[in-house]
Structure formats: structure tokens, C-alpha cells
Image (cartoon, rainbow, N blue to C red; front, side, top):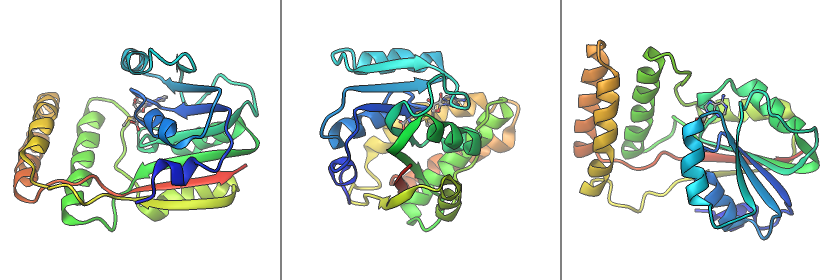
Length: 233
Ligand SMILES: C[S@@+](CC[C@H](N)C(=O)[O-])C[C@H]1O[C@@H](n2cnc3c(N)ncnc32)[C@H](O)[C@@H]1O
């Protein structure tokens, strides 16, 4: 599987933006891959993300969090060298967000999209996809924007109108872990409990959760393959 260094090691990025950063999961990927940087800013509209992000990077004065809506980035045009989004396009209205990401990117800078997709997955990875789709359904009945994941081609079709050049495309998947490791179910159990509770009043969604829990035990779980697309503005 390509490493963060394989993907990012050759680009020069001083000012970096991670859109819909959450707790900064993708910032760790950036730190592994980038040769150097002056500043990384993570933005997310969820104020609860700020605490986790700030705690994770509190010892690094070059990494900051700003609360912001990805559809309207409060940054000047052409003000970043690298602009990224990871596993968040299906939580957003992707076309205006990608347009905003391109706007704040300087000419010659790199835009990177990393997102799991739903097709061409092993059975164990389908457990991850189906879990995501259940989470999306539960969020939706709770009034939260959360779409099902895209196909690989849908992701490429979202990036294509941006007109990026020198595209690099990677499929990241790791099937080496034991898919029935009891630690996986242990980690997922509080998430199942939370979502089954949030699905109260929707018995069909609660049943779907119970069936998925059983699927994790019987079929097993691997993270779904993610597509990474990177290109130059
Ligand atoms: C699945 S998390 C991904 C977090 C991180 N990028 C990662 O890869 O670990 C999706 C994130 O999108 C954020 N999000 C959803 N809608 C948003 C919006 N309109 N503006 C900014 N962030 C948003 C959520 O708060 C959440 O942190």
C-alpha cells in the first residue's frame, strides 16, 4: 500500500488546510507524509471537534484549529499550498465544498481528496460500507446531513470538473489484519449502542444495527478501500 510519504513526500507545501478535520485524523497522515510545512490549519463546523484536535496537537505550535463551515471557507483566494479533505465529502454538499477548496488554493498548489468508496470491496470491507450507510440513515432521521458513501467513479466525477492537472490516484486498502479480531467488536460496541439509541422510534433501523453487529462477528471487518486523488491547480 502506498505510504503517506509516497503520496506527499515530493510536494512542497508551506501552508496547509485540512477541511472537515474532525479530531485531526488526516493531519497525522499529513505529518507522516510532508517533508516540511510552516502551518497546518484544520477546520470543522463542529465545536466538539476543537477539543480533540487541540489536545492531539497541543505540543505543536504550527498546527491550529478554526471552527468554520466547509461550504464557505473564511480564507483569502490562493492562500494555501495544499488543501485536503478526508472521509468527509459524504457529510457535505461536495460540489460547493470542492469549489471553495480550489478557490483558497494557490495556482500550482495541490488539492487532495481522500474518501472511502462503496464498490469493489471485499466482503469484510463491505461490513464497513454497510456500517457507514447505517450511520448515515440514523443521522438522517436525526436531521443531520450524512449521505451514503460514493462509488469510486462518482468520486472521480466529483474531482474531474475542478480541472486539476498532474493527477495522482491511489487506492488505499489494508487486508492484513485479522478481520475477526475480538478487539474490533469491542471497539465498535459503544458505537453500536450509541447509534441504536439514536435510532429510537425507528425499529427498522434498530434491527439493521443488530444485524450489522452480528455481521461484524460472523463475516468480520476490514476498513473499506479509500481513493486518494491529488492534483495541481
Ligand atoms: C467522518 S469525519 C472525518 C474527520 C477527518 N477528516 C478524518 O478523516 O478523520 C467528518 C467530519 O466532517 C465534519 N463536517 C460535517 N459538516 C461540515 C461542514 N459543513 N463544515 C465543516 N465540517 C463539517 C464533521 O463535523 C466531522 O468532523
